[in-house]
Image (cartoon, rainbow, N blue to C red; front, top):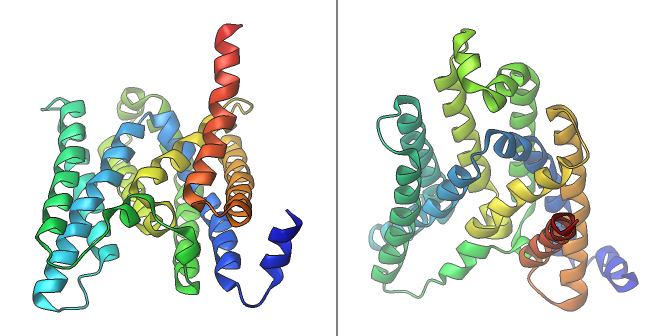
Length: 278
């Protein structure tokens, strides 16, 4: 650990400081949105949105290679695909005409299949693993400002719409009877989830971002009783494990995103197993 702090202070390793800052900043976003996702029980929707982004990434890479337009970036493609997926799922959720679980699975699988197809049609080598799992050590100062902006947006929404979101999370039917526009609130929630997973894609990728949305919130839910306290606790838990994962990856030379999620998974699953035995 002393080696990590020494390296962190070394001017020649700014990427390590950026990685640690990104982990701390993203903890605010995961801490705010994660408890809502867990309480609303839309982890599967968040997973579907995150995995469908591979389709947008593949399409952007394909179009950029064939058109040469620099605007077709993987990040732009991921954001567009995430927002479209959120709109599709939100529309089905509000109407209730189709089985929601089937639509979620369809968006999930079609997005990933489209991404693999477009990447295979691109004549240059593109490693899909970099998009699936990300690399927090490659983040720049610009990425940090973007994460800070996301934190500010989520904080504003949480402060302004805390009570309506609380009502929708725990009893959507009762909230609708009381006159709340539950369809608009659900669409807002899906859109914020899409925006969060798309902007945090470079940090841990499409696969691991869902773990950071759910595991800190699930851990925080074990010792909190209110949604607001769950948000604070989830942000603190995420910050601690993000810092520990970055430090562990620097010392052992392993992927940072995987280290963060494995530490979180162990902290959540091991007590759950012993609790189940008791």
